[in-house]
Image 1 (cartoon, helix red, strand yellow):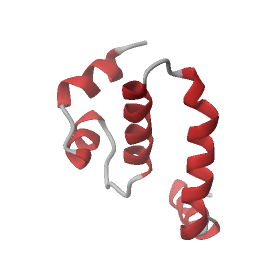
Image 2 (cartoon, helix red, strand yellow; image 1 turned 60 degrees about the vertical axis):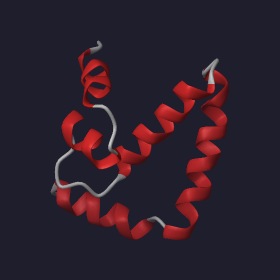
Image 3 (cartoon, rainbow, N blue to C red; image 1 turned 120 degrees about the vertical axis):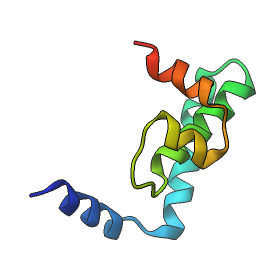
Image 4 (cartoon, rainbow, N blue to C red; image 1 turned 180 degrees about the vertical axis):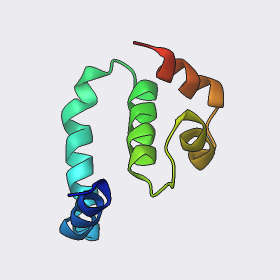
Length: 80
């Protein structure tokens, strides 16, 4: 099976109305991992941008999609 086949299969198996509820549940589960609200919001935005329908995903396209600062995502991508 090709990667495109997996993407199509996943796209058809996720109900558009239900994924937001699951996503919010996930964010609720990991919220306690962050001492402050700012990092929690940043992680939430990053995950939403990773899930976005972008033709190519790298630090530049993700930052442009969310109008974020490029330097922040470059720093995150450079961390081990």
